[in-house]
Image: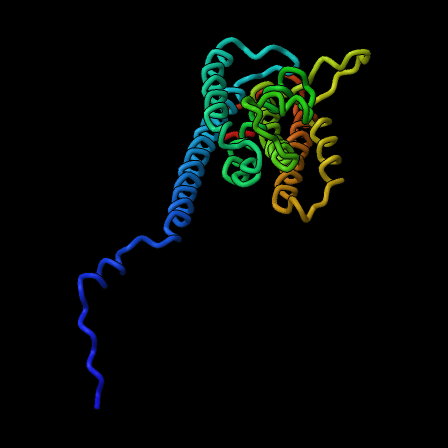
Length: 257
């Protein structure tokens, strides 16, 4: 004989709907996850804004044409508000990047820090013809946000590309490599290709497996400047000083460089 089922009563419903003793624990987990996602989104947004502003700073700095000299007033006027905005963005997320959270969200802020390192190291080089060191770079980041050695080095790897653009643009407009005034106690001047080669030598002393693609791009940038200098020297010797193309009456095409 099949046993009959006990009818479902209102008391049973009240017992099933009673809050579990585990609910407070899961509510705590939910609140913590919500805070985590909000914090992560704030940091990612700030990193993207810092990256965009840093790129704009670099574009303006590429208009500079002289080493070891103050940044021209028109460029400084454009970059000063951008620098202020970047400082405000770092300060706004600084509370989210303290203690263990500095490492928990390091990958989320890393892109912005690297681009900012590229911008400030480029400006530092233009003003001093010297590479910014780690302590100086860390001092440029407000709010006590930690600068990792990896972000510092990756920013310097990207700096090589900007120095390559700066060198080639200067050769195209001025017909010569950018050259500084020489360091203190030394009378001889130092051009940007010498600095790029020294930087390449230092980078090649690092573990190439850790930087992979960055190492390849860095070498290609230095080689591109070397090739441009060789071409400029060879063509300069082939053509006498003051040489002008003879267009003749037909106005034939003349090879341009």
